[in-house]
Length: 417
Image (tube, rainbow, N blue to C red; front, side, top):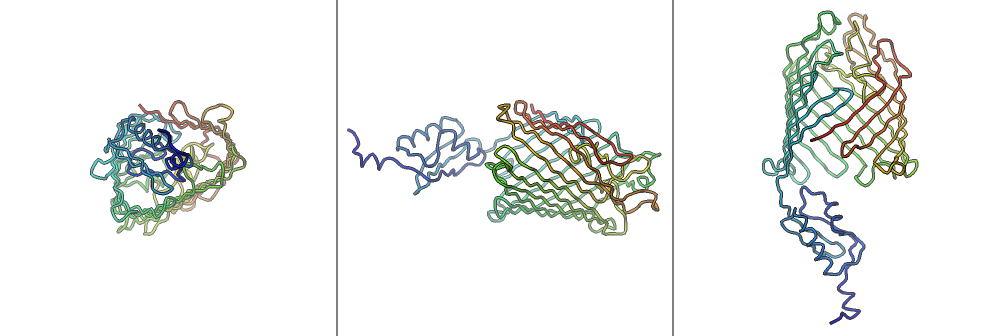
């Protein structure tokens, strides 16, 4: 029996939107794309049932149902694996830390509705351990609760001292919309500056400490206009991140520590854009004591290409002291080269300028802590080897100061196994 034209027309549906409900861990776009559920395409009833069967055949769903709701096609799913997780080893190289081995664990629903993860990173100079728990919608639909704790011990070859930090923090995260996120955290930190070289700067010898243990407060903001579909190649996009720490509350070592990071993306064509970046920070004493080297900022390597890690800023007896203020601005012209190499590849030409400056204690004026502008120019390339992202740059300082440490080549990659 054949359908009349009227009956056939009634059996075909076109939907302006496709919506996924019930997915916790599988990306919604993947669910839509896997079996061809797209808007503005006419579907017969039997084609909708075929999409259901196709999604069930992937083996990752307990149930699948396609339900028309007006102009919207709703894909209702229930996932089989409600506690996905992984354990992963890694070998990474970054200009700041060098070659470092890592181990990473994560699991969703480690506890009911709670994500958990742990990371360990180790090499000759660096030891890090970081763990976190995160639970969504603890208060209403937009306030989450998180907890993180970590330990770090660093003894860089180019430093005249070592530092160790234990830190734990509980925080609330509020996401009033997809673009904006506020965080407020209360934590406890124990940190020390130790193993100071006897022949180094008298300032570092004054600043060594067996440990400062105190609570702290952190306030943070992240806002971005960027989405997964638009990353600044077709329209102007931007992102901004702010963090303000109030360290060592209840002690005479109180500090205010403010950090800013912004990026703006201005498209020049479908495959070319300008990237403007600004990274800045300032730390100041709120008590009777000056700041220490473990509190101050250093810059270089990936943060200021052309200069080595901790390569700029005030120095004494050849030792990097860090600075209470830092500022690095970046202008980069980027070209998407996928059309040429048929692989994910972005090339760039960049110019960076900025500095690290200011100390509470200059040993009676014997240390120069004034602002001295540095700048560098270079080229960058970002690509993938298999599924491993790789970033490479070559940079040359064009403005520098005596005593600065240069680094013309930088590499960043992480391979997992």
